[in-house]
Image (cartoon, rainbow, N blue to C red):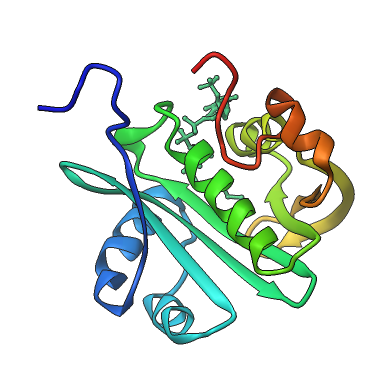
Length: 173
Ligand SMILES: CC(C)(COP(=O)(O)OP(=O)(O)OC[C@H]1O[C@@H](n2cnc3c(N)ncnc32)[C@H](O)[C@@H]1OP(=O)(O)O)[C@@H](O)C(=O)NCCC(=O)NCCS
């Protein structure tokens, strides 16, 4: 049995044998989810990394990024509906940011639906800022995308975690 305050979550990099777990979370998280073939290709792509967060019950969520030289892109983060609001996405996001910085990225970007309040709150709380809007970006319903970005090398972000923790931690936790 874990110690009372031990972290119940394990973060680990996904490999080809994790395809089903990643797709399962994706299907349960998005109306319009990514094709399994695309994830399979990404699991083999050296520029793309996917990490899973799991507990004793199995995989709970994943984060999916691409790093190209000094820029990183957050392709997706998703948490199974049964495991939300337990800090899983915050951990995955912090881990992805740390990895991207260590891989040489100075900034990270993402696109998120303008009506995705949960994701917007997650990113803002982690220190991401809006840098643009892509009008009618999502072809299925014409929703706009908010383009967000975070500076991965700004020391002040690491000094004030509540504004942008690179390790996903929140002060006092
Ligand atoms: C967005 C998503 C990844 C958040 O996952 P999560 O594990 O529940 O998030 P966390 O528990 O780590 O939340 C971290 C912070 O994000 C914010 N947040 C997360 N979910 C929220 C919600 N439903 N409403 C408001 N704020 C929310 C809060 O500030 C939260 O901190 P708090 O719980 O201490 O208040 C999850 O809702 C999800 O998988 N949604 C569907 C997929 C998706 O839209 N992905 C983003 C694509 S761009």
